[in-house]
Image (tube, rainbow, N blue to C red; front, side, top):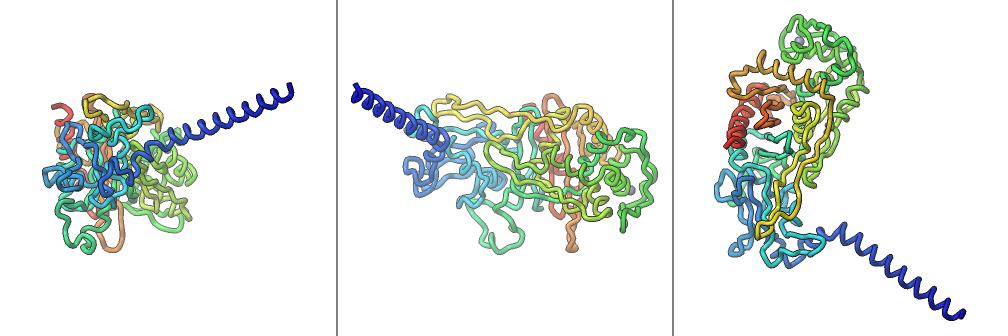
Length: 457
Ligand SMILES: [Zn+2]
C-alpha cells in the first residue's frame, strides 16, 4: 500500500512539473512568438537580412514597400517625391531610421499568429495598409519647401495619421553623396515627428491657458495690461510690441508674453508642471507599438524663469506627436483618439488578420476644451486671418521658438479643424522658419486643404 502511495505522489509531481513547463513555454510563446518569428536571422522571411515577405500600402492601396526578388531588396515607391516623403514612415534601406514601418511592423507583414504560427509564409506575407495618404505626404513635404521640420495630420475621432512627414529627407534609390557630410542633411535619419523634441514657443501658452481656466476662477473677468515689457522677478519679460489692455482671449490671440508671465506667477511652477503631465506632454506615446520621444517640463529656478516658462520660452520641450494628440483632444471636446498608423492588415486572400482601432484618451474637461476652442478660433479670426484658410473652420495657436546662435527662430503652428466629415488635428514645425503663424501657418493651410479634399473624395 505504501509503495502505491509513493508512486502516486511521484507521478503527481511529474505531472505538475510538466504542467509548469508547459505554462512557462506557453507564456513565452505568447509573449515572444511574434519576435521569434520576425527575428531577422529567420531565413523563412528574411533574405540576407532583408524582410522578403509582406507589402506596405497607403490608405488608398498604393504599394509603398514590397520585396523585389530580382534586386534582392525591398522596393520603394515608384514616384520619387513619394520615396522622399515616405522615407521616415517606411524606414531607409540600411535600417538606420529606427521608427520605420518595415522594421516595426515586421510581424504583421510576416503574418504571424499564435494559433497557426506563420501561416502566411507560403503566400508571401500580408498586406499592411497604413492610415497615411501618400499623396498628402507628398504635398506636406513639398510645402516645407526645403526647410527642416515636420508635419503631422491626424483624424482625432478615428486616430488615423493621414500625413507624417519629416525633413530633411532624401531619395533612398539614389542617396546623395554628401548625405553624411552636408549640414543640410543634419539629423536625416531621425523621424522628427516621432523622435524629436522641440521648444514649444508660444504654443505652450495653450498649456498655461488650460491651467488658468481650471485654476483661476475669475479668469473671465481678468484684464491684462501690456506696455511691451514687464518686470518679473529679477528681470524683464518682453513682447514684440505694446499690446495695451486685453482679456484672456486677447492675451492668447496676441500671444502677449507679459500677460502670460503674470498668469504663470499666479499659477506657480508646480501647477504648470502638473498640467504639462496631465495633458500628456511628458508621456511617450505608443503608436501601434512605436514609441515617441517624451517631452519635458523643466522646473524654473527663478521668478523670472517662471514667467518665461508660462510664455513657452524657457527650457521646456515638447514632442510633436504628443502635441498633436493634445490638439486632437481639444478638438474632440476634451477627448481625442490615440494616434495610429496601421489601418488594417490583410492576408494574401484579402482576409483581415486583426482589428485595428484607436483607443481614446481624455486629456481635459469638456468645458475647458469648449472655452479654449472658442479662443483658438478667435486667434485665427482676429490675428492669423481666416481668409488664409479658405473653407476651413480652423482653430489654432502659433509659436515662434527662439533658438539663439543668431539663427531664425523655429516656427510652429498647431490646432485642429471643426468639421464632422474631416475632424483633423495638425502640427507644423518649420525649423528656423521665422514667425510661426506666417510660415508654418501657410504649410498647414496647404496640407489641410488637400487633407479635407482627400477625405471627401
Ligand atoms: Zn504683450
